[in-house]
Image 1 (cartoon, rainbow, N blue to C red):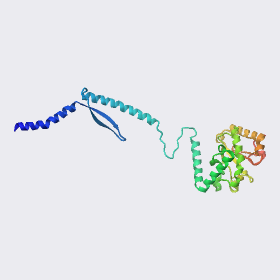
Image 2: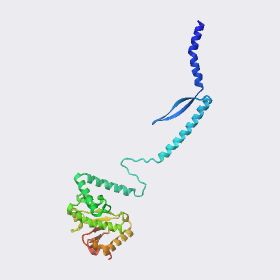
Image 3: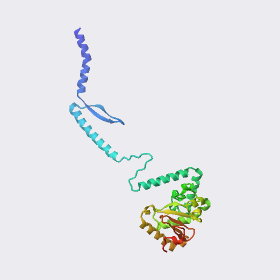
Length: 288
């Protein structure tokens, strides 16, 4: 009876003991597996009887610490180049952040006006194609400037933009040629902006325009140079250049030049003449 029990115990425990002894000669290697939210350790087994368990595990821990430090440094370097952009916000490191934001706001207003009516959008696109075919696309100012009416549009109960009637479209073509030539010669800086073009008679009267203003037939543009607004010397130098051009080349363009104390400049190609603050030639700041 005792022999049978002893035999039975041997049958049960001998495989277990053999497994334990074999497991003692197995070296464990840990591998870090990346997950989106955590790092976990997986144990892999390999036969390496020549190295002790303690030495193997110690070396593994040291190596993984080094790997983790490298990964951490890489993560930090990558995060330095990440730009976080908030929806609806514009960030810029340039000195023109405010001006760019203002222009973006103006363009958004123009786009809202343009896209509020599908027929209007098609007509404006046709107008742009027409001007491009006459003066070249590079000489067509931004439509957000070219369709401006007057600064007092809100007070007068009108819209900030208006497309001229189609029969008046040819009238702006020679004025755009003149405007481009003045910029090409450096008389007007490239930063010049248009702030009033076509005005219907009602808006022209409310805005204080002359009774025979060329804005009503879409042949005139009012411009200004924002960067010269607080620089009287540069403003006067630019006006002197305009006066000289008007004197020597104005007749060939049928150039009408109006210079105002506010710094605003009126250009048209509907009569060779000059004037100042009260629409009279005697008030012009041109000395020629």
